[in-house]
Image 1 (tube, rainbow, N blue to C red):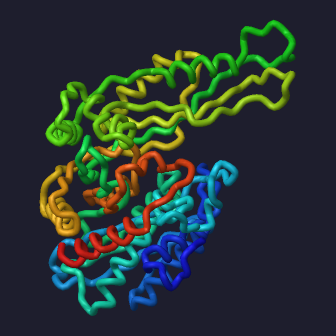
Image 2 (cartoon, rainbow, N blue to C red; image 1 turned 120 degrees about the vertical axis):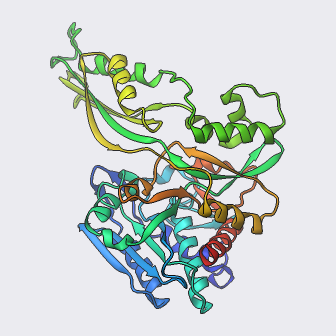
Image 3 (cartoon, rainbow, N blue to C red; image 1 turned 90 degrees about the vertical axis):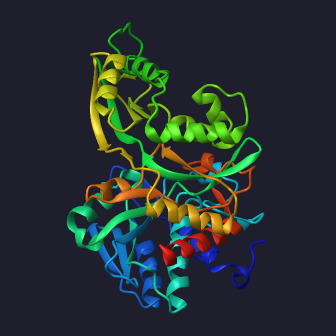
Length: 433
């Protein structure tokens, strides 16, 4: 049975409440909208005595931000941001109602428990810890919660940085999701700190043919042509290409794993449940994600479409796109649906030292290693303002939990004590950096 509210840490209650607000983003402009979640966040910030600002460039796609004044206003501001939308969840596939925010087995379950209403709650309660103490952060902290991240930020962060750049005045760095969490490396534990993201290209493959009766001899079949292209792109094994970050990552994995692993993939495999996540950072990935064709069983359609999620290493976009054209063939049209930049920043500097230090104070002796995220965050939009972005949503996780496998997966859940840990680490970082 769920624990009574009075027994729940505040960070858990906030994460649960946010999960219960359905902000499903179906992509392509179809969404439940983030308005209610943004209003919930704004009300919480207002209760702390802060002044939230809202921006809704598209109906119901609401963004909210607030600034906490630091002790030294001459220092560059730090942005701490999250997104309020989640990907769809098919309820019958889950063990629990994905929007009930159920607490079971010491974990909070629901869509967004991993991506990323957990971090949203950690951000809010870390800010609350500082404000309620009567203290102030060392520098200005700008907390921002975006809409539409799960659709590449087209109706969220991209519009905010275009139309409300003053929200981020004086900021030079940002932290957000998909970093700072613990993984197992052989028999040891380490934390991953995200210092880069692959570039994004969401493409649509379009095959055309001749419409006709389903019973006839018909070699000019759009569905067949598309299926061949999808199989070709989905089965392509892209070569390993290392960046500065992934070279550093592999070097640290070799030191920590104490194995005879020789290849990059073998080193990635030393991370156990996180290995698929790590492998994706070492190469381009091209995954078919949706198919659309036809309207009746006995009618051959004249058009068939497939969506392909393409993630490439920063700077290789045009080379990969040219190779995709070769793979699918000249008779397949390629349409660019969403395209965004890749990022890579150094694993050094004052902010990196501060994040590593904060983790070390709360989990002493556990190494922190850099990695390149195979996906993307709203740091891409902030980069257009010259802001360097990192992934730091600190979570101390049990070794047996396949945390990375739950991003956009079924039965998302996060340990309650990991949320409390993350709140403490973030509070420490925001107070001292």
